[in-house]
Length: 145
Image (cartoon, rainbow, N blue to C red; front, side, top):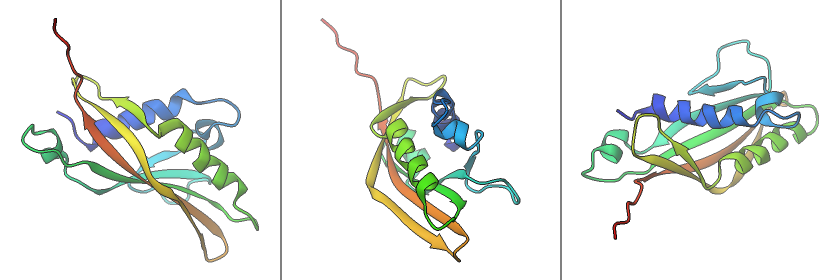
């Protein structure tokens, strides 16, 4: 059965593929969290949360309801947002228009970003940059002769 846990695992599997010196996995030491980060965790961090859509409807075969996600980068604010902005640009490179295979399922998900990233500075100590995404349900097409 496909659920948000399966989707998050597919997101994290792709995240781990990019572990070069300037890649998000390395910069965050693998800190990609679902829904919220635990208290006291070191920055920078990435948090993914579902913002809309219904998985039951999406994968029931009766209707398609695309899933909406928000991917957030949180970092310490040091008079600029250079590191957080770079992380978000790299996340867009990693996920935009990419397919996320779901283990033990014929279906897969294609991610696409919605609009441009939004940046906020929270109480002059933390930067928050977020990007909205749509996950589109895809079913492989079988061509017959």
